[in-house]
Image (cartoon, rainbow, N blue to C red):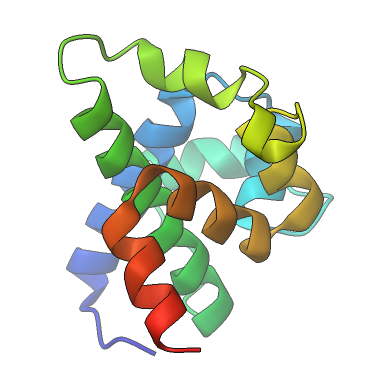
Length: 132
């Protein structure tokens, strides 16, 4: 697990929450994308936006890494229109068997995040395939 200071991890938490808010996800979708317990309430997510860092474990850090990677790739793909990130995440794509990227993430968890990131970021996809 990466050795982030509490300050760094708090910054990552706030950044990821801003990304997920920009994707305009429901509370349930946000909880699922983050891999948090199902019973996590909106008020808990509100704390992550400003007061509290995510649980610090390997799986959470991997999810956060993929979310940030997807966000960066979407910003590079659509540099002039920040609203395209939400649209892209919620549009059916043939490479996902006519499912939305969000659907793939919700259905497949970390593997879904990896698939969506690979679709957007050829460098990530290349590095992932070379380690197998």
